Amino acid sequence: MNQPIEQRFRKLEERVEDIEHTFKEVIKNEEQLIRLSQRHRHNTEHLKVIVEGIALDIGDTRERFDTIERTQAEHGQLLQSHEELLKGHIADVRERFDTIERTQAEHGQLLQSHSGRFDTIEHTQTEHGQLLQSQGELLRQILARLEPR
Image 1 (cartoon, rainbow, N blue to C red):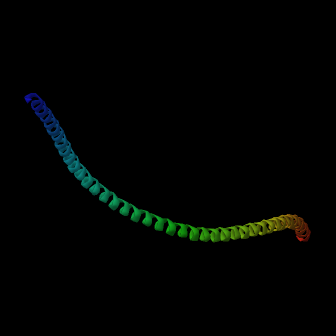
Image 2: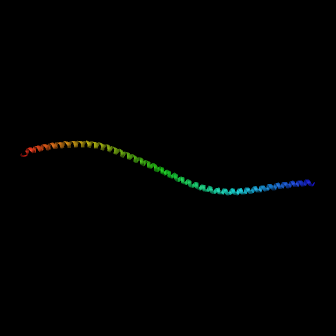
Image 3: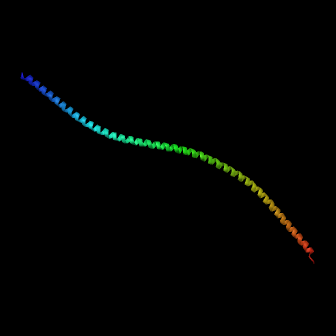
């Protein structure tokens, strides 16, 4: 009769050993979970610091982009106003060039007219020179006749 009790006792001991082994495994797993949890908390805090830095960088970047957008809008307005001014100046310059071209054309016609007049004056001077020579010759002849011989 001892044997069945002993067998039972052994089975109970084996079961207790299994339970203890399982319990040790559970404790190891819980210790690993605690270490993982601590590592996770540390990593989460580190990520939180990184994310806060990124959030600050994003805020700064947004401010910079806003500044860039405002500057671009101002430059766009300046470009438009300069474009309008330049168009006005270009129109004014074109008008002045047109006036200069008309004036040059008028001066060209005036120069042609003066050239014709100068040709006429030169021709008249040549004729007068010839007349003066012939009159001078006549005066010499008259003087030669009037001189006592």
